[in-house]
Image (cartoon, rainbow, N blue to C red; front, side, top):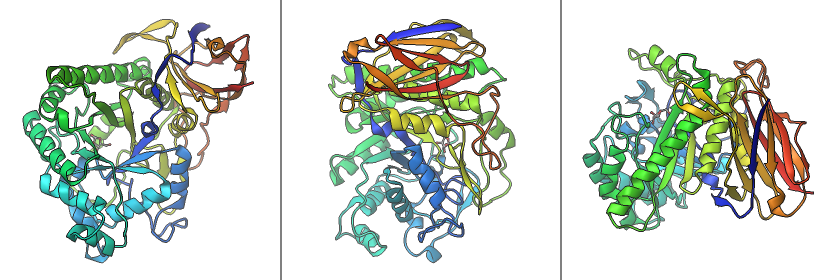
Length: 503
Ligand code: AHR
C-alpha cells in the first residue's frame, strides 16, 4: 500500500479557475463537423441540421469554449466559401487531411451551433495561404456591427448582431513543416505582428494568440517561441502550446506520467516568454493558450494515412479510448489547473469523433468515450481558486521521464459555497494508495459531498456503441473526513475527484 499526504490552506492560492481551461476544438476534419455536430438527416437533428444528441453531450461535458475551424485545415481555408446560400458554396480540396470540403457548414452555421451549445468561440485565422487582408475580412464579417460590405453581408445572411468573438488564433502550428504555408519564425513573427496591429486597429480589446510550437519535441522548440516573441511580444496576449500523448512501444508507465511532460512543457514556455519579456523590459506577462491537447494514438494514424483519394468526411483518427487513456486525460487536467496562473485557455482536441470524448454514428447513437468522464467532472467541480498542493508521495522510475511522483493532485476552493475539491491520480500499475489531506487550515468541519473514481481491472476496457457505459466513474465509498483530514483509498491506475462541503 502506498501513502500520500498533503495539506490544503485557503490562503495558498495559485489563481482563479479559468473557465476557458475547459475548451474544446471543432475542426473541419474527418467526421467532427459532418455526422459529428451536423447531420441534417439524423433523427435528432434540429431545424438547423445539428444533432441534438451531440449538443446535449457537449453541454454535459461542460465545454466552455470551442476553437474553430482548425487545425491544419485552417491553413488552406477560405472562410468566404462557407457563407451565403449553401447551394452556391464551392467544394474545395482540403490538403491538410486529403479530403473534400463541401462548405455546407461555414462560420454562420458554426456560430449558431455555438450559441445552442452555450460556448464561447475561439476563432483561428488562416495565416498559411492568406494574410493580413483576409484576417481583417473575416474579423469584419464576424464582429463589425453594420454599414460595411462584409458586416452587411453577414446581416443579409441572417445574423443581424455581430458575433463579438474575443479570441483569435493568428494561424495554426506555423512552425510545422507539414503546415500549408509553413514559415520561419521571423517570417511568421512579422506576419503575426502585422496581423495583430491591423486587428487591434479594427477592434481594440481582442485577445490574440501567437503560434507557439506544435509540440515540445520539435527541433525548433523554444527558439521558435523566442524568435517569434522578440517580434510580436507587445502585440499578442497568448502564445499557444500543443501536446498529444500516447503509449510508445507499450510503455504504460511513461504514458501514465504524461502530465510530468506537460508540466515541463508549460514551465519551459513560461520561462522562454518571460525571458523575452525581460529582454524587452516589458512588465506584461503573456498567457499560454494550450489550444490542442489530448491522448492521440498518432503512430497508428501515421501507419494508415491514405493520400490517394479525396473522400468527404472520412473516418479519420477515431481513436477508441480506454481506462488508462481516461486516467491520463484526468492527470493532464490536473496539470493544466496547476498552471492556472499562466495557462488561462485550453482546448481538448477534438470534440466529436476525431480523437474525441464524444463519438457518434451516422444515423445512429452518440455516446461518451472513457475520456469524457474526467473532463466532465473536472469542469463541473473545479470552482473558485486553485490551491497549491505540495504532495508527499513515493516516486517510481519511468523510461521516458525518469523518477516521477506516483501520485499527483490539485485542489480548488470555492469561497462562495465553501466547497473544496481534490483531484488526484494514482499512476501506480500495481499498488493502491492511501491518501490523507489535511484540511484543518480552513477552520471548519467538512463532509464528503461526492466522490468519484475512474478505474477498472481491465485497463484496456472501452466504451462502444454496443456498451456505451462499460467504463464510468463510480462513487468512491472509501472517502471520509475525520479530525480535519480527508482520507481516501485510491486503486492503481485511477483518477479521483472528491468534493468536500462544509458540514
Ligand atoms: O487535432 C488534429 C491536428 O493536430 C490539428 O489539425 C493540428 O493542428 C494538430 O497537428
